[in-house]
Amino acid sequence: MQFTDERTLWSLVDEEKKNINLPRRLSFSNEKDSHFTSARTSCASATSFPLWPASPETPWTRSPMHTTPAPALLYHCLASLHRHEGNIFSIAVSKDFIFTASESSRVHAWKQPDCTEMGYLKAKAGDIRAILAHGRLLFTTHGDCKIRVWDVSPTEKFRPKKTTTLPRRRSFFLYPRKNTHQHKDYISCIAYNQSEKLLYTGSSDRTVKAWKVSERLCVDSFVAHEGQVNAMMINQQDGCVFTCSSDGTVKIWRRVFGESSHILTVTLKFQPSPVNALALSLTPSSCFLYSGSSDGLINFWEKEKMSARFNHKGFLQGHHFAVLCLVSIGDLVLSGSEDATIRVWQREEGNSFHTCLAVMDGHHGPVRCLAASVETDDVVTGLLVYSASLDQTFKVWRVKVYPTEVNLETPVVNDQQAEIVKCEMSPVLSPSWVEKKMQGVHYQ
Image (cartoon, rainbow, N blue to C red; front, side, top):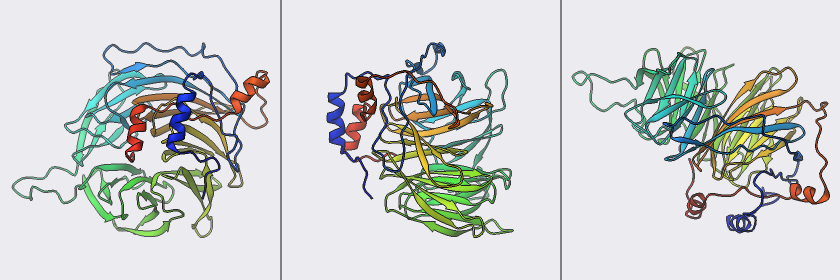
């Protein structure tokens, strides 16, 4: 399958040099994407959203706010924080906190939604690739191939407490020193089955492990793919486990009734490109599975109600480079890409047609991870979106999606401004990312 507007990295770099003096307050949308409509751009004032002062002890610095709403979707950047050392690998959102994990041994906690720094938790090992928040618990994975469980109950002061480490430490006198239940390579993804209280971890060693957290035991371990496991999801309704890999496949696993073992039920493969991200969209009337791959496409499948079979319904096309992360809330899907942009897609009710509502730019490097939470509103669908990039920035966006019958006032745009809005431009790419791209470095 071909992109409708495919360009090489060299052409992007040349375009960057030509357009480096263009104003960065504009957001550009692709009018050429086949099958999808892109929202027009309008301007809004950012004066009603002040920036909060940064703590003198924080490793982050605040960046100026970027505001660019569109008619059916309004969004603006609430906060932009720059980390001086290391990249953020994972974001987790709980009721009270936002957690960010990086190459260091610290996981920072931030208060919603203004990103006030609350504190951090620190472990012996760093390189924290995946974290997951569930209730008052936070699960973190580390470079020593272990999982640590923390109690992060909200208090006046952020005082996390480590409750256990998986796999548990065994007695030197009763067991061999080497733990056979431990992953052999770094843990790349993590998911939690709420009803069964099972924690799942996927690794670069191609295996998936299931952990009974209360007993601190690994209850099942199996080789899931021919390549490294990049992402996983749990269907909380039926307990199915979805995994994707660099081998280009998405697999669905089911736990054997009354046992701890898992069996493979379906293998989904539409293209040979490595699959980097998964998202599951569940509504009362439908179930859609999304997968983001290194060719820049987002394939999606719909689950049949009677047979529970997943049928391939098409793909979303718009990103120029690899899709690295996905998140789904209701009928909305957000995708982060190696092209440094975040796209917001909306699925129409009753069918599989999708519309690209907005292209959110602001990062200068690949968008490595995304997370989102719902903001309650009687009229519109409100989201808080959290994004982290390999340009060492962490951004918080407020997104509001208005019903189609709501007409928003848009300013009059003259012909010259319209031409600027219609043109397509890739965001400014960081020199370090361009250098790594030339060397063929893949971001995992």
